[in-house]
Length: 90
Image (cartoon, rainbow, N blue to C red; front, side, top):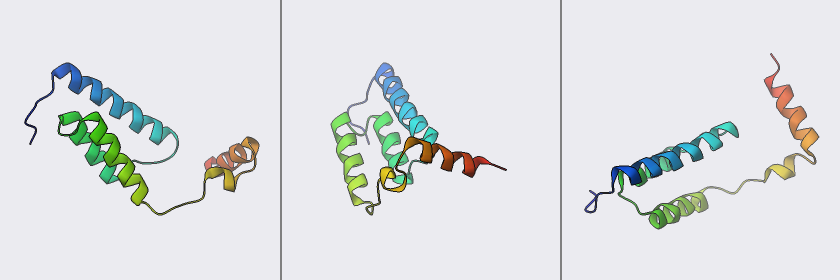
């Protein structure tokens, strides 16, 4: 439980930041993990400070298995765009 409630303005600022981040993730073709979504809810509610939220998000990211960066898959922007176009064809 939050012993130090945040103001409505601060809650709105935090919600806007979480919504912006989620939208960017989704526009990139990904979905936030349930763990990250839960952290976002706790941050907006005031249960986590900004530094606590960032630390928890980094800890979560560092706990995930390593994967190859996108540039390992595509040598150029043209290749990436061609792959996206092929994926989106009916």
